[in-house]
Image (tube, rainbow, N blue to C red):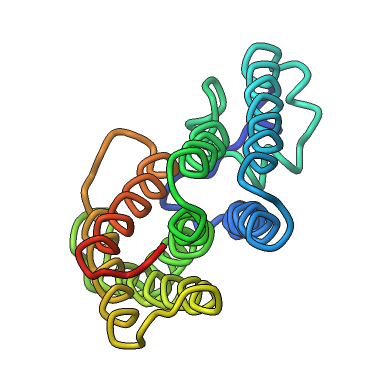
Length: 218
């Protein structure tokens, strides 16, 4: 890959097109699963997509002379660190697939939308407006955006779900608050595992556990 086509962005880069692509893909998966697909059909389709993503990533990494031809994608979607290795697209789609396979629909939807919205939104707010640092790569502003979006997502998904099951407003608000707190604190942990894999699985697991503790039906 020549220098003029190689990606130059880092984790600290705003990279809006990448964030929007991240968000749109997650929202698309969530909305299609929520309103159009059964659990089994969603698994088949997302599993097929995961295979395609993995194959394309192998081609991109092992045949740089081909990937150098997609200049705009290299510039706006990939990071410099992903030039010679798999991009975050692989753990992203695997995180979605494992979440969908492993958890009840309403819980999986909370996790999918959290990955799609809270994760990129916190990065944008943190990079653009983050002044009060929690750590080198985290800020109060970014974490606040993650907490607020996670709270809203959990509330809205379970509010939609309550049209099928009777859920009281009090437990729903408490559930949304606790899920948002737990996922926000987890997002601050500097794990070496890609957060596109850990965030949806942790969010789904935490939501499932809290539903059991609070008696929220699934």
